[in-house]
Length: 180
Image (cartoon, one colour):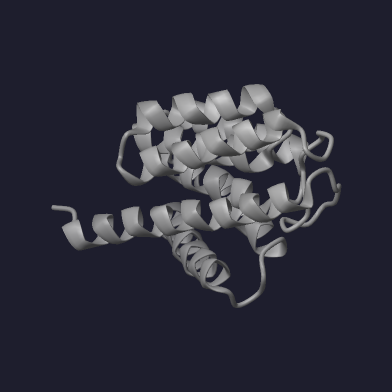
């Protein structure tokens, strides 16, 4: 029987992860229009002061609130509205992917994380989201590959880098045991 504390811990970890993405997005809105490859630089392509950017952020924030409440259909709707206004938001695509993950739709979760990476190829959160979805689908090889990519683009020895490292060790150990 699964340990309820482990599942609760994983859900809490995902919530904290989504909140972290929200803070990144908030910094991006403040940078309006800058381009770059790091997670802290903007991925939006709108003019400074554009009302649609502010509206996109409102929908994004609503999506986070719905996700935190476990209202994944509403979160998906809010993130999609955000993306209509700002389709170049790696953060919104990634959070949408996490909402699909929470609903159990791994194919959509992976697709949205891939869209996030199309916008920003170095957006570590998307690699983490894909790793979780691939792991859930039983594809440990792809989960490992994406965790390794996540670790390349995330601050070394940060909370999430360490969590990814632990997950990576566990997955690699499981793969070796499964091959025997």
